Image (cartoon, rainbow, N blue to C red; front, side, top):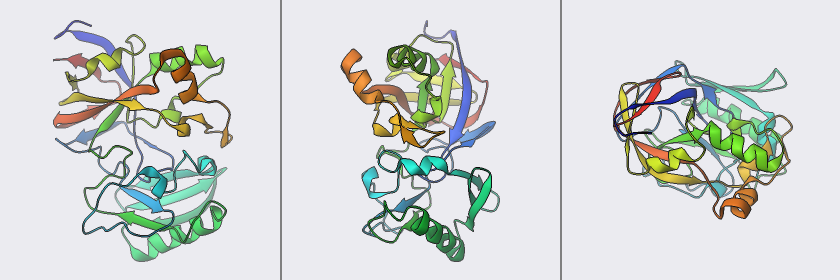
Length: 258
């Protein structure tokens, strides 16, 4: 696409993941702030093992410290919903509510931890602890970023695997369509206008075994990173971007290089 001209690319899905490893919340629109993630994206996580995350001095840890899909595919059986107004998380399976709690309240967190202690008992290395620090994101990347996923690229990978691929396997914030496969990788270092916000291409996203999990069956039914490496000699799919000028972003917005 030519610099400064409207692309045919449009947002075809907008999501955040309030709790690392659990299901996404679809969004119609959201205000993003300079140098920040989408509000509440990966704001909470369940520690699995040593309890050394310090909310008063938060630091980035490798994702293996937490319950997450790369290793704990049974999490895909759960559907979580976050109510921002009450900071309440509801966890269900097959339409049946299993747990509910206020993520900002000690009793609410205890209720959710007790559920995970039972549900994920085989995968746990110790008592699970729900952790959070204001303004901190438990993202895989040690920076405050958003992730863009190109739907055309996923369709190319579908041709290689011979199977349909749910785009949500890639756990992106912004799904775009209307550009060529892999074209988003050419946005590295470039400014991207979406709605009222400006973002800048930051880093290609390396994919891990979490993408192998079928979100309907909670089983591993393909090896996407291995396929990418075999065909393209890399495991990247999608693009991390940083917010350089905050504003409102909406599902359906057109994307422009500026």
